[in-house]
Length: 386
Image (cartoon, rainbow, N blue to C red; front, side, top):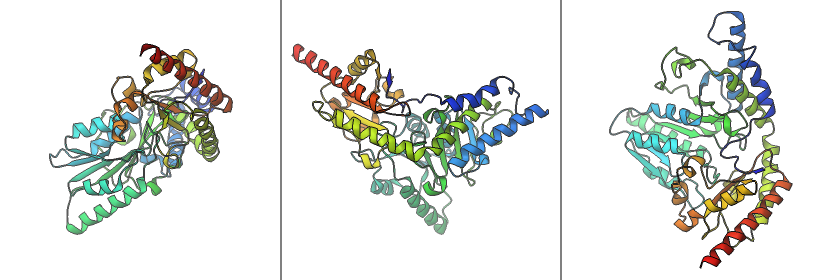
């Protein structure tokens, strides 16, 4: 098996698994209990939060632990004041959780992107109005891996806040970024990005599924989605998921430690993979390498059916995706690929190849050979039908 869909999910690292197991057995105590073993678990939990926050240049008290990126995004959107005049801005390449929350807000605008999926800063400025309350732009696109100019957008947001303050306007303005895909591949620091809220997801950084976090700036006042015992500063009630949080901290710290080396390794593998696939008939490589995550190699093979290709590749032990896993599973056209100007034929033939820890030169060589074989067989099948 050669797994090439790391953007959808990463395997749990050995160290993360080892770290979490004791908290399912001998250290099972509820961290809210008063007796000493439970207090020790509470300390371990708080330290894990501190370790996660340290990676992004924050403190554990700034994080709300959630069940993953989708819940974190929903919690971030709780900031929007119920007001028919309130505006929301999102980019055209956001995760479905962002788009659906924007739709629910009612009054939203979509920021255009260029052919590489990068936000058009001029369009962002044009669509930012005195009524805008909430902005959400992902740090990196989940389908193309395009890295967004978040710090540049944050400076524009800061200028608009200053203008409002001088004009005596009371409309709040908050900036959120979903950093799920970029975590472990590029540096993610709150002070450099300049955002008010930031979403993290353990499942994208070799941590367990079902655990994520939302960084919340000190000037932000959220409304809880889940109420009850008042855990997570009253913003996310329910007994804390201690084992998963411990594993998340281990995985993200491990990824941060090896970030530069892993990024360089993946970039080299990407160039090798790209060269080996470059002679496929009609292939188009999507996105721009200089502003793309090192492990992403999205392509399109116009005239071919990507779904047929992924099943044929699966039969030979190669696992790739046709795009964002949640969109692909519903059989709908990708809003991201539509936004970057791909035709229906190009979208139908698009594949997302993403690499990770277990990918090496041997895997790239074998996978490229099998992709050539499968593509050639599909071309010959179509020629026989015509």
